[in-house]
Image (cartoon, rainbow, N blue to C red; front, side, top):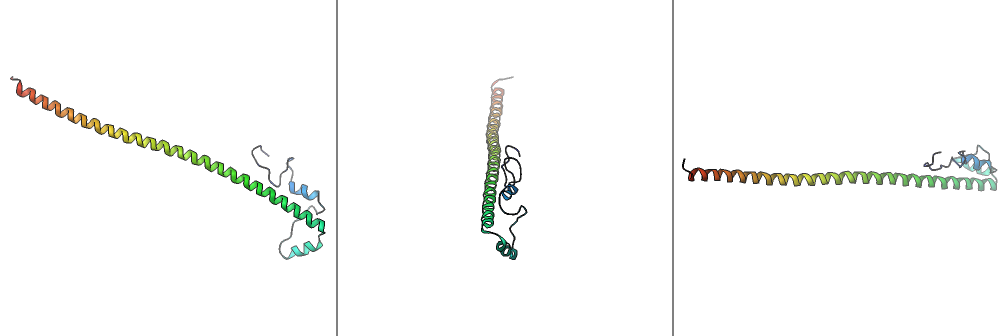
Length: 136
């Protein structure tokens, strides 16, 4: 089992099957599985009070570990989503910055065009004035 992976119900510190380990320390048979449906009442009638209590303890432990796995999985998924959101927000903000820069450059380009037009008009006006005042 890797360092980052959470232990599951079927793994203990030694890497062995935790469910089998629980069953091996109880008075329940190693191949015991709770029956479903009508067979459950028959199974319960054949079990001792101690076996019923051990089955309950095993079920609670199994549920506890499954809930732990579920919380860890949900936390991992939430962390992944948060990282994805942060990444996308960075892309959006960089694109927004780029859009703002483009708008600013377009405004400057318009101002330059206006100034060039004014300069052209002024040079044409100056040229006419010079032509009209200087006799050739």
